[in-house]
Image 1 (cartoon, one colour):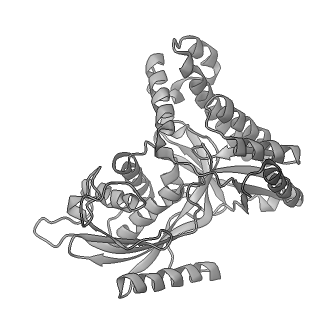
Image 2 (tube, helix red, strand yellow):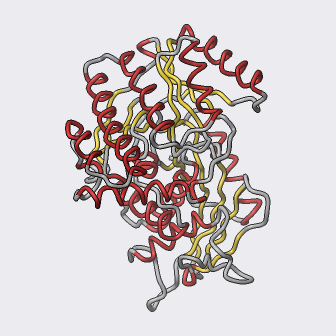
Image 3 (cartoon, helix red, strand yellow):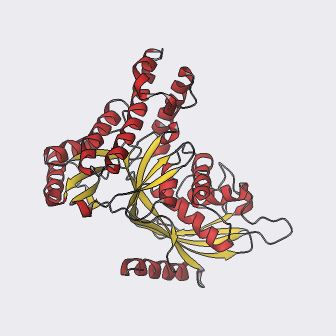
Length: 406
């Protein structure tokens, strides 16, 4: 481990001791992600290309044999949340002092335990001690920034429990169970991309993923070797995917697929897009279809360019993707649009919002020599517009979920 990882392990172990007493059995981590291209395509059975960030959620954990799940977050004010594994159900977290409704951060680790229990892999109470755990959570994945902080928490919890109990989870099954936790327990109708990225990405690569069958390929993505950088600009505009807008767009996509007689919008050929749009009686569905079909095509174009060694050529594809998200899918916001417009005008090769939208972050592909100038231009533009100063950092393709202390 490098010095940063060693410091993270020490902090997690010391935090666990202070909160729970005793020693954790280990420390596990899962990263946040940025999505290079392929937005709102995952729940349409389409294609995506995320990469893991160096920012992670760490979970120090120890087993319990009384069916109790104690979870504590160093990042959220408040006491340890005490939950009962047997009581966990959608709409009921199962905490002491009432049903503990599903609101709040604790619903994510609770949902993972519920999903593991429902899948029959988490220890139950059939003639033996019930499984449980003490968890101490600490994260540097920015929350609400469209960088999958929730998926990082889910996956880190799952790999910690797998490590404690030897559940035998593959990265793919981990991702599927964590998505079930988010969809059915937390109530956010997300696709599979975020959990797959957190569980499966490898350092120095982007993950080219077919979200229908979960086949994937690790695509080399060493920007530094090519004199390039990928900047993340966190607008600090908080987004909440559970507020209904995300769900409405997903429902619209499903309605459009049904109207077109296909399993999912992924099945509408790019070359037949115009005829498909003409067959839709509801004009509100047409821009949703246009975005998804053209976005899948943009993913194909990016992978073709990367395979050919033409990394700089993906810049305009990223910018076109932002225009589609802004105009057709209507999930951008003024701050995200300002990042893209300013960065491209300042010499960036391309830029677009990343994540579900309604705030969060944008990515900017730049020449290494111009990165500082582009970043300064964006910061100055925010100040001139009266916006809160954005947070900028470099996206370095990093490792997926893992145990840290071995």
